[in-house]
Image (cartoon, rainbow, N blue to C red):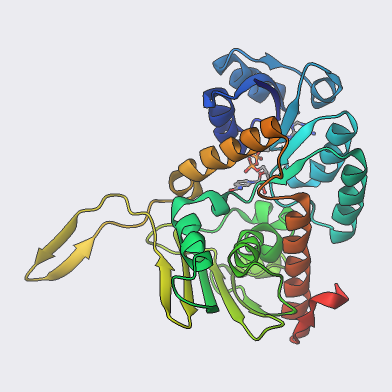
Length: 331
Ligand SMILES: NC(=O)c1ccc[n+]([C@@H]2O[C@H](COP(=O)([O-])OP(=O)(O)OC[C@H]3O[C@@H](n4cnc5c(N)ncnc54)[C@H](O)[C@@H]3O)[C@@H](O)[C@H]2O)c1
């Protein structure tokens, strides 16, 4: 039984608490948050102790920590937890600074402790099935990947200001999805971005709408489209065209009823946002972590994957600013 300390009792920490407590291979021993009442409330729900992050990391009775704190704390906490001998699952992104993330990668690797990054979409049953069919050769060689990832509504501008920008905060998931599906990193990244949804996002120095093209050494191409606004719900689709067919993973809908009348044919909207869409994926992600740590086997998503996606985000940020494609070898 893996004894787990959860660092961060915010939005995503609360999701992880459900899965840690609900998994037969793990138990939620302690919860921390710099906002003490948040930690106390969440800990009390699961009969866990509310403690500081430092106390949890220093406790030899805790086997693993799940880092769900604000992004600017991730690298420091990964380093401290691995140095203390813990297995770690840390939320994305590893850091907003690629340089800092690489230093963290080096320090964590020196401890030999396993670190998984929370790219939960790999565990979405639809995307996992698409990847399985592609790898089984069911559409021949995958040649053109298209990822659409639209949020229902933009976050507050106060969040945008500390987010690191759309490419590091939001599209980071899609960069990892591209790496997951294509099984390789691209050689070059080309990006355009615009603040057409909310000019205040542009005034804060960010974009809310972006298109990125990834090119691969063997000639394959991927296109990622992001928007902070899709008024009909959380739109998350992946499509890959291959030499012998097409694979498409569509949205999860609020229900499966299709209404056909003289006015036309209609069906329900996509589920509202990530908490609705990805609950099964977060649970599967945690199960995969627990199983790998218990077996001492390789983790399905690593710190290296976190760095690879962050490097692509850095390249996209530079490309959107400079207007030129950026070679990943220059990052
Ligand atoms: N994988 C996903 O789908 C997904 C979804 C949402 C958020 N995230 C990531 O998860 C992280 C948290 O996001 P959120 O939306 O839950 O934010 P949030 O603000 O709701 O929660 C973060 C919590 O961390 C606490 N905190 C900050 N520093 C701390 C420290 N040193 N020790 C303990 N607690 C600390 C804050 O008080 C806050 O309660 C971010 O890095 C975000 O990018 C990932």
